[in-house]
Image (cartoon, rainbow, N blue to C red; front, side, top):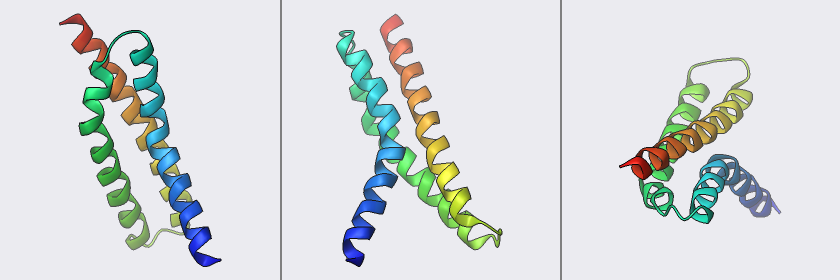
Length: 95
Protein backbone atom coordinates (compact mmCIF):
# COMPACT_ATOMS: atom_id res chain seq x y z
CA UNK A 1 0.00 0.00 0.00
CA UNK A 2 2.88 2.37 0.72
CA UNK A 3 4.28 1.91 -2.77
CA UNK A 4 0.95 2.91 -4.29
CA UNK A 5 0.86 6.05 -2.16
CA UNK A 6 4.42 6.90 -3.15
CA UNK A 7 3.61 6.42 -6.83
CA UNK A 8 0.52 8.61 -6.53
CA UNK A 9 2.58 11.33 -4.81
CA UNK A 10 5.29 11.20 -7.49
CA UNK A 11 2.65 11.31 -10.22
CA UNK A 12 0.97 14.33 -8.62
CA UNK A 13 4.38 16.04 -8.33
CA UNK A 14 5.16 15.45 -12.01
CA UNK A 15 1.71 16.57 -13.14
CA UNK A 16 2.00 19.78 -11.13
CA UNK A 17 5.52 20.37 -12.41
CA UNK A 18 5.28 19.35 -16.06
CA UNK A 19 1.56 19.86 -16.73
CA UNK A 20 1.63 23.60 -17.51
CA UNK A 21 4.60 23.46 -19.94
CA UNK A 22 3.10 20.48 -21.75
CA UNK A 23 -0.21 22.33 -22.12
CA UNK A 24 1.61 25.37 -23.52
CA UNK A 25 3.59 23.18 -25.92
CA UNK A 26 0.38 21.48 -27.07
CA UNK A 27 -1.27 24.86 -27.62
CA UNK A 28 1.58 26.01 -29.85
CA UNK A 29 1.67 22.62 -31.59
CA UNK A 30 -1.99 23.03 -32.53
CA UNK A 31 -1.12 26.48 -33.91
CA UNK A 32 1.43 24.81 -36.22
CA UNK A 33 4.46 25.93 -34.21
CA UNK A 34 6.68 22.91 -33.44
CA UNK A 35 9.33 24.97 -31.64
CA UNK A 36 7.60 24.59 -28.29
CA UNK A 37 8.14 20.85 -28.25
CA UNK A 38 11.76 21.27 -29.30
CA UNK A 39 12.39 23.51 -26.30
CA UNK A 40 10.80 21.03 -23.90
CA UNK A 41 14.03 19.03 -23.83
CA UNK A 42 15.66 21.97 -22.04
CA UNK A 43 12.76 23.24 -19.95
CA UNK A 44 11.59 19.98 -18.37
CA UNK A 45 14.95 18.85 -16.92
CA UNK A 46 15.67 22.40 -15.73
CA UNK A 47 12.32 22.45 -13.95
CA UNK A 48 12.97 19.10 -12.31
CA UNK A 49 16.41 20.14 -11.07
CA UNK A 50 15.08 23.47 -9.78
CA UNK A 51 12.10 21.94 -7.98
CA UNK A 52 14.14 19.18 -6.34
CA UNK A 53 16.84 21.64 -5.27
CA UNK A 54 14.28 24.01 -3.75
CA UNK A 55 12.53 21.09 -2.02
CA UNK A 56 15.77 19.95 -0.40
CA UNK A 57 16.56 23.53 0.58
CA UNK A 58 13.13 23.86 2.22
CA UNK A 59 13.61 20.59 4.08
CA UNK A 60 17.06 21.36 5.43
CA UNK A 61 16.58 25.06 6.16
CA UNK A 62 14.62 24.40 9.33
CA UNK A 63 11.43 26.18 8.32
CA UNK A 64 8.21 25.36 10.16
CA UNK A 65 6.17 23.95 7.27
CA UNK A 66 8.50 22.54 4.60
CA UNK A 67 5.74 20.52 2.91
CA UNK A 68 3.77 23.65 2.02
CA UNK A 69 6.92 25.36 0.78
CA UNK A 70 7.76 22.32 -1.36
CA UNK A 71 4.26 22.29 -2.85
CA UNK A 72 4.36 26.03 -3.54
CA UNK A 73 7.79 25.88 -5.18
CA UNK A 74 6.70 22.94 -7.33
CA UNK A 75 3.61 24.78 -8.58
CA UNK A 76 5.50 28.04 -9.13
CA UNK A 77 8.31 26.25 -10.95
CA UNK A 78 5.73 24.61 -13.22
CA UNK A 79 4.10 27.95 -13.99
CA UNK A 80 7.43 29.69 -14.57
CA UNK A 81 8.51 26.88 -16.90
CA UNK A 82 5.29 27.30 -18.87
CA UNK A 83 5.91 31.02 -19.14
CA UNK A 84 9.49 30.45 -20.26
CA UNK A 85 8.34 27.94 -22.85
CA UNK A 86 5.73 30.38 -24.18
CA UNK A 87 8.37 33.11 -24.45
CA UNK A 88 10.76 30.77 -26.26
CA UNK A 89 8.00 29.70 -28.66
CA UNK A 90 7.01 33.29 -29.45
CA UNK A 91 10.65 34.32 -29.85
CA UNK A 92 11.47 31.43 -32.16
CA UNK A 93 8.33 32.05 -34.25
CA UNK A 94 9.37 35.66 -34.86
CA UNK A 95 12.79 34.66 -36.14
